Length: 466
Picture 1: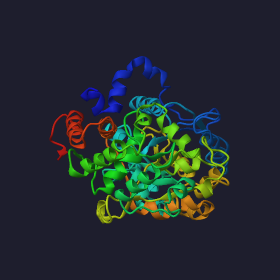
Picture 2 (picture 1 turned 180 degrees about the vertical axis):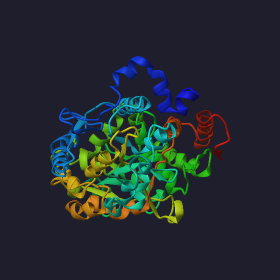
Picture 3 (picture 1 turned 45 degrees about the vertical axis):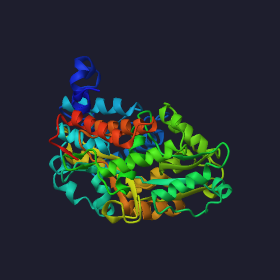
Picture 4 (picture 1 turned 135 degrees about the vertical axis):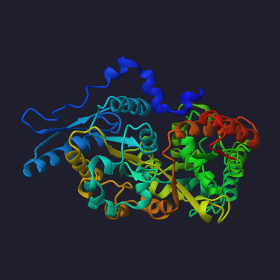
């Protein structure tokens, strides 16, 4: 991949889109910003659509958030008409469309971004800090008291808040208890080091037809490789991916991570073919659900949406009894970043305001409505997930011991990806490094190749450490 494409995904997409694509993105914001009866008109957009991608989110916004917000504003004497703009497309398509809209001073008043896009959009000047758009009301919003500073960092770039985080998650090790019993491993397994993870995988290898361990690798897995594999391991080795605007290259911590990949795939503890297939991640889910995979490194999404007994894509009727979960161990006790024994990695979406909205006060009121405790509880219904609000988590997570474990044990030791424009290209380079090791290249050679790729991404050595 060329340096320009790697260096700035948003700007490259906008510059390469052409006027035809720009015209397809919708009209600039209505100068009057008003409906037919003089109501203020606002638009909210997320990558969701009823009956399709993230349908529950689309239905929640259109059936619960919007009508209640409109009724409240009407009762206050300041009527607002809200339109939901659905997408339901590939994330990169959605991202490019928003970038085109914002470049043209068009687009929705309130929109959802992946947390790792915040810095990229901010550096391209497509979004502005929340305080600059909405004023002091954004600082004084009572909801901030319920959002942990660590979770707020999802929406923070260079010390400034650009929006409100829309939930978060955690990375854990899931293990198949019936397979552990057959291999003579404990049902309450909690590894204290990478060596203990590998030792358990070697025991599982004795079972016929079982893949001992799945740690995502390669470019076919995409960002799942970086999120579920490289970055938790790097943190567990005491390393970082970046420091401000500088990026770590060929470091001993990265070589240790790549060494772990060699130990897994070079010793037949993982299936290298899965790492090369477009549907490899889904196949790993299916293997786990059907008792053919022993240990899986994944986010809590796997528990909530994949192996959920009734609604999962690979449902496990006996999930609650058959699936164990453990914290990601550091390389050795105390060897993790900051002297940690265990680590995690978190992500999530962020809702931001269009800096060109003609009604910033009301747009912020809509933004706040999306993050009210009542709205989040309504979205969850009888289910549970880790939301951005502590008060909601306190009310709903006891329904699900695994999510309570993730919130109480994993989030305190979690880290987040850097919201910088170069990150997507850096992430791809890390994926390529793991693919090289799975294919048989030495960790040292793969780490050196990563540094060369980083030099290309960053147009030189000035911002590379190591």
